[in-house]
Length: 202
Image (cartoon, rainbow, N blue to C red):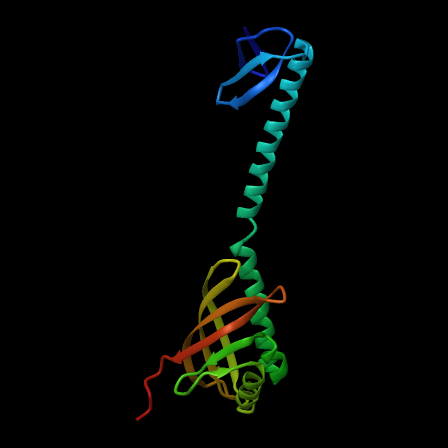
């Protein structure tokens, strides 16, 4: 016997009425094969059972598909770029206002500032202290992001930066690479490194 339910062809083998399912229910791309053996379930009730099973199977597949799509689409690089732009603006504001504590708080608790010509400075307290020394120089800083890439765990930012004295003369032009990491739900500087484009003085 062959029934059609929602475009599926259901083939019933070895049907002896009254019947019930005793072995397996398998779904293919176009056919559903159901092997039946003798028991005490009326045909109408059995048909209703099959329709219900198919309905919930299809709903389950759709829900799993939606959950998978949501998991894949959680990370958005454009949104992450906007967050980095916001943090860079906060960095610039802290630098201009000589707010070394505010600048230090933009780093992760295990952050490092990897300065040229010297050892790395690690931890917020040490970074805050070094930033305070930079700020006493009263220089103007201009930075530009070139590109950002990564994932929901880590982001890398490539950019350039220049330093100017109070009269507007350029003191240094450098390239930098920053690794950002999420801490407490915010993107923070995890590694900050740069080196000058100018030839070392002799």
